[in-house]
Image (cartoon, rainbow, N blue to C red; front, side, top):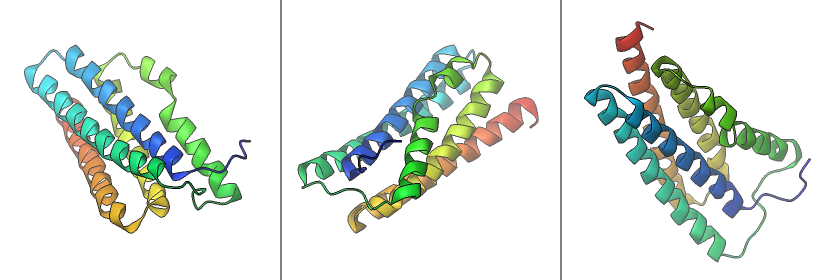
Length: 158
C-alpha cells in the first residue's frame, strides 16, 4: 500500500488523466464510426472531455504553484481513492477489449458513471472557488451518460 500522502496536485493529475483517456477513447470511436451522426456524436464527447482536461490542468497548475499540503484524506479513504483511480484511470485492457459499437457505448457509460463518482470524491479536496466548476463537470458527465444511454436505446433497444 502506498503510504505517501496524496496532494491536491496529484489528485487533480488523476482527473487530467481520466479526461485525457476519455477524449482519446471518443476520438477513436469517431474514427471507427461508419455513420456521420455517430462520428459527430463521438467528436462532441471528445471535445467535452478535452475541455474538462484543460479545466483540471489549470486547477492542478494552481495547486502545484501553491505550497503543498497532503490532501485531506485518512487511512482507508486514502486507500479507497487510490484503488478507485487505478481501476478507472489505468484500465487499458478494458479499452483494448472493445471491438463493437455496442461494447463502446457500454464502456463509455461505465466510464462516465465512474467519472461522476471520482469527481464527487474529488469535491472534498477542493477549495470553494473550484467546487462549482467541478460540480458543473459532474453534471456534464451525467449528461454524457444520458446521451450515451439514449443512443444505445435508439440503436440497440436497450
